[in-house]
Image (tube, rainbow, N blue to C red; front, side, top):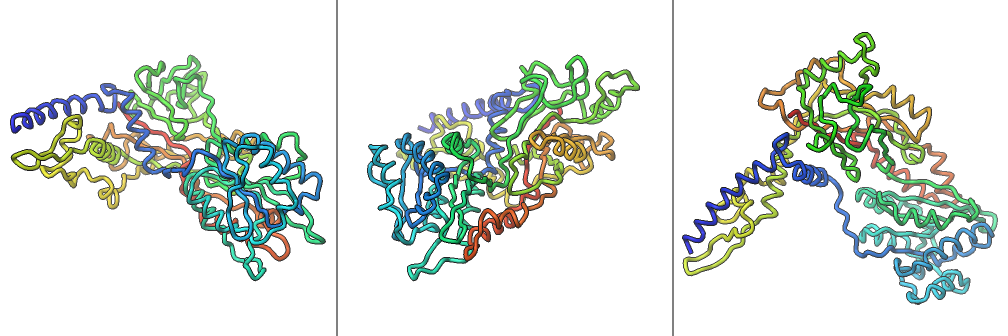
Length: 503
């Protein structure tokens, strides 16, 4: 037994040396492995979405909102939506909200029966739709959901809630990385003008949102829309090819500034679309990159003068209802140590030893988990220097100042011309001389993270919120929207990230 354990230890050392060689970043590294590790590193700061079911949820308020359907246009809108949902009933759990209860509608195997129940006026006009309870259920379950309601929450004494009860549930959904889209229709209850809402809780894939939008195609456009979001803006690029990124290229399509390879085969550039990030490896030092950039001028015969280190990235702000982004900024951090610490810890977590017993007592079995052996002590506890969650509480990546700036003039000009294609470009700071402040010679090849972040943003106009989310005697929803927008103002939030290494 002792001999067998000793052999495993020796074999593990050899394997760890090999893994260390293969996973190194740079020209000698395995780029596929590097991309995997970089994606995991990015995801560590993102919300973990765990849905309670693979089905969507659809909730319908049965507490009197049927009066809204007396308007023919509103009735057609509701009809189009319920036709779509009941037609795809196998993809939904459908609930009624009434009598302080959330109840699944019967007839799950009969779309026609579900449709009939949703349109049966005898089923409507009940009391006490538990709207707050439903919002909590949506936020807790985490699955995309549709809610049809007027957001009037009553007590059993018949008094309308006036507090902004929806605030924490909206915020919890946004913190998950989702957004909330409102379709707002008007209707009259006697002489009082009120609103009926079709509310879609969804994520960036927007599969449910698209289903709802498709359902409303062809129906009367009797609604206004509003998207409550922190960072749900479509992005696009206009690069020369899939293998060439947003760095400067001359008239021949060559990167003569950073000297990165153009065929992409060595991993000098790759995109991580779902993570809104890109990775670059440059073959020139920052000093040489700066010198090369200064040479690419009309005076020096360049047909395409150098203007930006990164450009041709576009953001669609045409539906930015929640915030008006006025300015952005660039934050540069040296993440080499943080990246290494995280990936060491991640490797350790994936390769925990198994404690076993034999006649000599307890021993650690590393069979199949040799890659984790260097990270644990003799008792199978992770070593303090690899305990990333604890280290991250006190360690922060070093911020690099006076190197890069965001081009807000270009952003403002292109946004004014077409808010669907506002360009995001990064330039060298005029103070940058090629030497990164505070960087030692040993850190010359460190991995840099370059984030485009929101620097200044205005909340959408108050009168717009009031017109869509309040009416006489009920401001609970408008107050909730205002609270959310104020609490979650995205100053400092990353919009897009570049990872750059000098190799």
